[in-house]
Image 1 (cartoon, rainbow, N blue to C red):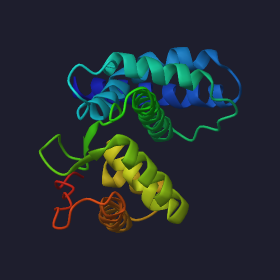
Image 2 (tube, rainbow, N blue to C red; image 1 turned 30 degrees about the vertical axis):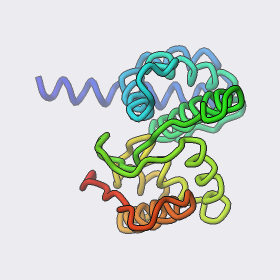
Image 3 (spheres, helix red, strand yellow; image 1 turned 180 degrees about the vertical axis):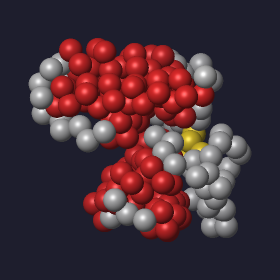
Length: 207
């Protein structure tokens, strides 16, 4: 049974690679077949994004996946590397959906864009929180200064990739990912002007 499960995962992985290659070559129908195969992982990423949203948020996990799918449909000329690249982009699109929603809410009503997020990649535990819009602005600023550190935050915090997966995707060592993760979190917290003495969350030992 174990061998069958491993073989099944390998076959699915190969099919994902084939579909990404087809999509890169202009076959837009590949996306429609790819999403059902990756649906569980996409929902997991969506739950990571939604776990810190207010109760009763208009968007829920399934809706967020659907919104990301719509945005995927408008991506043209993307040269997909692998499954990790696809998941990283899915996470970025989901964050964009939530930030756009928050900005729209804020423009309608002062303070309407406040959505609390916990800067912790391991679990939705109590800790320092900030405005999703402020976090997005800070990440944009970080990307201009140090793009790699920004990518580490995106991949670890939002996409939920392990240290090893992040290191492999960025083609750096695991030690570099650990260092970038801690430095980037500290920089973000300072950039968002959190009160002095606020503890920067640990990575929870998540590998």
